[in-house]
Length: 290
Ligand code: ARG
Image (cartoon, rainbow, N blue to C red; front, side):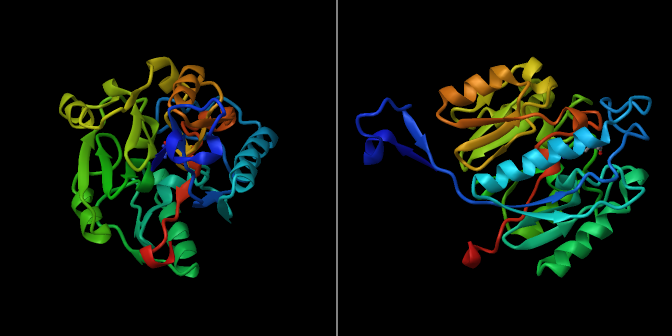
């Protein structure tokens, strides 16, 4: 949602960007990284011989959590489970739209047991959960843009999941294909900034998907350098964009477009091939409760 400066008298007289972005409060689920580690390699970022600094990962994760709450968002926390080092990447735990959840079904056996923990947490907290049929890694491969849904396949989620998503969410699903193994989930290659605004790395998508994405007016194309530090693994509330501190070019692009970049350093989690968005599952409420 955007409001022009002329419509916002509070900004009159002050130097303002062309548009004033509005934030809306969100509800997130995050998983504490108590058992985070890199002990297997299922994406090109993971190297099992690189040690994780447990104290630093906890401090970086805690900084993200408190930054969300300080900016008015609600964050619930699911505790990690021993033996599930990637459970910290909550975005993969489920897909939640309009208060309805669709469970995940992980591609790699190392992560499969996570799904039941997320489903149990969601049920305990009042969400209706539909068990997944097709392989899918939840919100890692799924993003809402206004009333629509962008869903990816290519590395993790099966394309047949897109029909399941449409059935459970009742939303129009736009299917996209990822082609670069470094950007194996859609949330590493595309950020939703607002109901009608996206930023992405074109070459992470197939030519047909690039053509589909070109239909989004005013989309920000992000550089390969910024994508390679997980700049696109960002979370936006419509105004504040929680973005990898290392993605300096993207941070400038966001500022120029009237967003407020909130740089966050999750360098320890990048060792697992994840970042800000990967650690964040958005729990979108039922419309009447919104
Ligand atoms: N190590 C995890 C995996 O490869 C990282 C998941 C990142 N999550 C995401 N939403 N992109 O499955």
